[in-house]
Image (cartoon, rainbow, N blue to C red; front, side, top):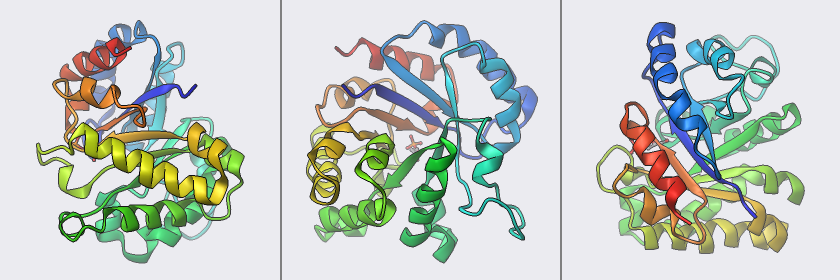
Length: 256
Ligand code: 13P
């Protein structure tokens, strides 16, 4: 059984300690009562430690939004796996907003290095994949997303792959108010993400890995995505920053 997961990607919001603490104190008790769905908040680095303190007694987990693959060294501005281990349990890797501007340091090979670096530290990678609007138009979704999945997971054992989370986030759906249809997302999650994993790592790994959908998810469409058999949850941007997040989580948890 795959445990359902809702992850909040705060992006570059709520990064001051007071505002992050105020927001989390406001929703923590409401969210702690939600069962059957694992919750992960991925705030900016600047507030991870402060939130770790207030969330310690709750079942809500924390994630970082990025990570370098080296443990230490002359990498100005970077955060390493050793710095995150012990503070958070998850780490988003290869988000399209980073891939778009990061060049080789956010390319497929780099994302693969980051995934390899995260796992030995007990950090669960949330690997983001997804095609552009042009790619979708050209009918390249399967090959492109499949390639991203392969590159991110290359060289891992099937057990390591099973521990990962893959977030299918079509670039055109992020922040646009135009989500993929649940059926479209389900198809890519199943045929492309799990299908690609099955080819290289076997059926068991493909069945065990959790696949999220992300891109304009809100309280009004979350239930339709959660009802899809290949989709195990969501990676939520804009709708994770206010009280509507509580509504979204409750609606997700209400899906049988
Ligand atoms: P939105 O939910 O704002 O579309 O963002 C999705 C996303 O990029 C999550 O990582």
